[in-house]
Length: 83
Image (cartoon, rainbow, N blue to C red; front, side):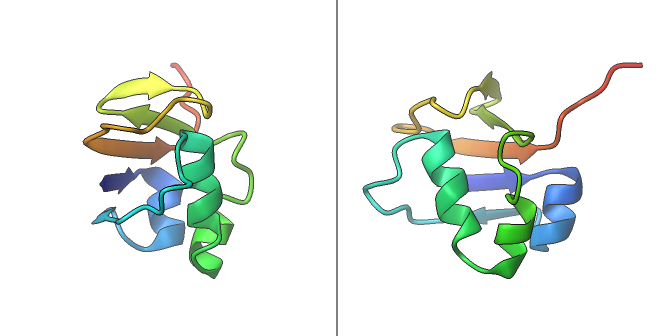
């Protein structure tokens, strides 16, 4: 699965995107964030407050409970502000 990171998430992790093989127990966006946070210190730092990280599956904004089965790409980004 392709993962894309934006803004300070990309800066903390150190890569703009990557392909990953997910374990079968990772079924939702929330599960994915928790799994990523356990990979190493950079991911733990990026996902230290998962409640503020936003996600999109195949370019559609989703909640942490969203299922990831069949997703082509998942993007993570910080909250956006208007202006």
